[in-house]
Length: 101
Image (cartoon, rainbow, N blue to C red; front, top):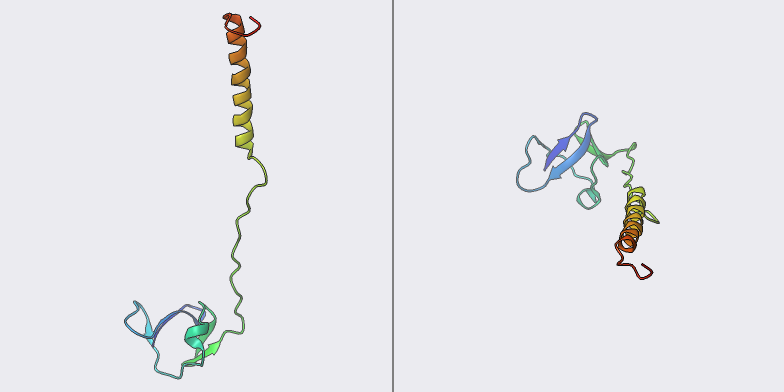
């Protein structure tokens, strides 16, 4: 088995077949469930033994928030649209093209 270990002795990648650049070869006993439970940094290589990392903390995945309403830019664009509509109405009235003109 090939392992990539970081400076904290955490196993961050492994390969049971093929090659893995910059990996070290491990020929010791692999714990049950290692491959199915593997997560980066979940296991340590300590004294040529693979052990569970007692300091492992699962990464927090940030969920993007979706705004409830229009953004500030969308509000400004809407205001500009209303101003253009009002000005168009005034121009049409001045040119005699308006309904009340």
